Length: 259
Image 1 (cartoon, rainbow, N blue to C red):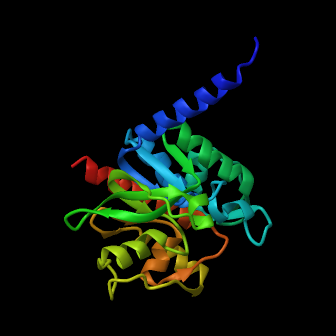
Image 2: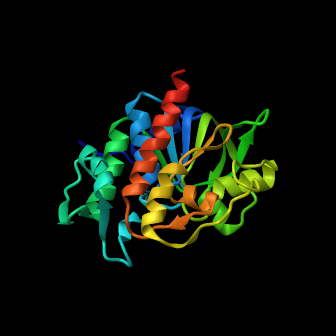
């Protein structure tokens, strides 16, 4: 078979445009491609919801790739092991209640399983604003992240969704832009992002599940952003809570949409 360069280009552009068209009206838009966002994408897509994840970087996986300080091994406590089993991630028991897994395999399987379940992933997308209609977050305003990085003034496009998940981690980018530009008050003591506290792994892991909630109508938070928004402790390179938080956010939204 003789290859045709124009046909290759046409295959890429037409298929990609179809992917975008299928995402103009979503059930759930997830912002942030770390472990909690990917886990949420998997469970939402597995439930048959039209869900897509948007990551500003070229790579997907957030800080999970590097484990702790570049040692690409992750630690998951006993409670979070169920997620490793769900994604068929190989692990070993380091000590009672502490399980280790290869970070590269873990991210790879999170990506593979979430997309195989029907989830869509868009990398190089920056979310510069939210859609705020009648006091409800109803979608996201997106642009190419290279445009943002180079400072080019090019108008974005809008993708509507029934729910948005804030999964951008420490920066809480979606929540912060919603407070600043939408002038909304989050479900926090002062209506703003509280900012994370210093390291306390045990307290942070407990808090992250509690903090995985709807912080404003239509806007859920998951992962490290949950602790940062509510002013709780960071937990460092242990990932059970991150994975469980993604599952919890997905389950709560599935329940809402099935009412």
